[in-house]
Length: 416
Ligand SMILES: *[C@@H]1O[C@H](CO)[C@@H](O)[C@H](O)[C@H]1NC(C)=O
Ligand SMILES: *[C@@H]1O[C@H](CO)[C@@H](O)[C@H](O)[C@H]1NC(C)=O
Ligand SMILES: *[C@@H]1O[C@H](CO)[C@@H](O)[C@H](O)[C@H]1NC(C)=O
Ligand SMILES: *[C@@H]1O[C@H](CO)[C@@H](O)[C@H](O)[C@H]1NC(C)=O
Ligand SMILES: *[C@@H]1O[C@H](CO)[C@@H](O)[C@H](O)[C@H]1NC(C)=O
Ligand SMILES: *[C@@H]1O[C@H](CO)[C@@H](O)[C@H](O)[C@H]1NC(C)=O
Image (cartoon, rainbow, N blue to C red; front, side):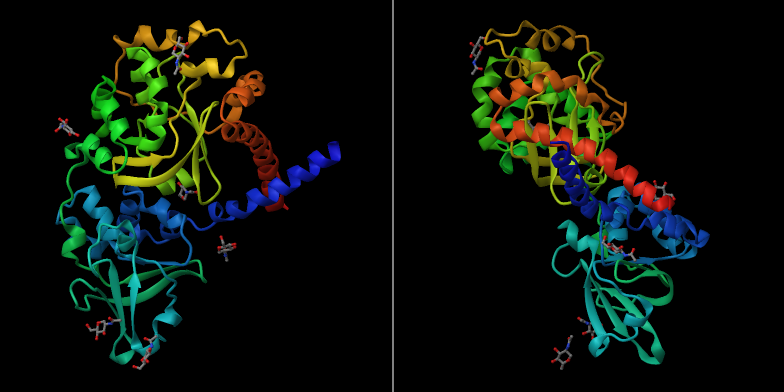
């Protein structure tokens, strides 16, 4: 028994360490921090959150520009969204070290960029043309302009074939990347949801005070996990059964009061507070990823992120395949007694009206220390909740232990 458990832990450790390797990889912020003349470029990689996305990618080339070269761009006073597009045009989704740059087959290559990967770029505007010029020079231009606007200066950091950081002489101009993007506050989130498979959730939102909570939080950062219609339709009978306050809490439970892009979610497992979190009513859930898939776990259900409707800092809306059921509202599903649990409705109803709806607090830290509190319920959850989520609850508790063991093992091996 004990032996089998140990073997299972070891297997999980191996499974966890494999995707874990990507997290232990490069850190563009600290790579560039060694070069003070790139501090402006580095600063904007951070505030646009591109740094996180770069750290989560392999086989890439960052074309950095020094502080003097950044001044032209800064004088354009772009919004942070446009800035992100411009900088993402300078991240090539292929590895180009100094040597490869000077030995390009046929002397020219077209490299897809992170701007292309956002889906914002139209036509070929997300590609960079690299051309070997006379005298050993290497030219760079956005395919958009059809010109060579910058040249290779020097290599700053090479880690074949994970990341190459090079200096180019100036920023690549691109009308498309610099174009003003609509303010996220001007986006009608419910019509966006309705048009992309989340009409039932959008209609519920429009009929509830939760809509105001969402609107109030967009400017300060908002991540929404929006159940697709198939999932929400099946849930409607239960939803209609909730009190007005319960409905509001359920809808607010699907929003997190900070901006979390997909790549940020992929590098930050742990507990998250939601728009419904209010003092004693925790209304939190756990984000977990296996390196590829990101899942949201409540004590009752595990939902998977299946798509992104909009990712425009400070607003991001993901679609998920199940409705998130908070234990604060659906504790009955966890309790063995068939009688309706009176607590189920209580926390949702009373404090709602007086509640201040502007959430500023960052989500709780990523310690899984909360989970043991739920454990007495788990056996029952197996009977009531759908089998899929029940096994995942157990799996998660187990994985949490394995993570703890694995990380101490990992650090121990670093120390040695
Ligand atoms: C490159 O990335 C891979 C995959 O994450 C990793 O296993 C490898 O150690 C990295 N290479 C170096 C030299 O860090
Ligand atoms: C990368 O390095 C910077 C500064 O060196 C640090 O603040 C940041 O937390 C690091 N990021 C990751 C993902 O480790
Ligand atoms: C290089 O040029 C030759 C002849 O024009 C062509 O057949 C080949 O596909 C080119 N190679 C690349 C990698 O573009
Ligand atoms: C890059 O641009 C040059 C000149 O503008 C052009 O001759 C070349 O064909 C382009 N390369 C590719 C791969 O499109
Ligand atoms: C957003 O669109 C919905 C229809 O989906 C409409 O009912 C609502 O009034 C719109 N909101 C704003 C602020 O325009
Ligand atoms: C609605 O609530 C009633 C009373 O609490 C309960 O008997 C019924 O099963 C609930 N219906 C659904 C669909 O949850």
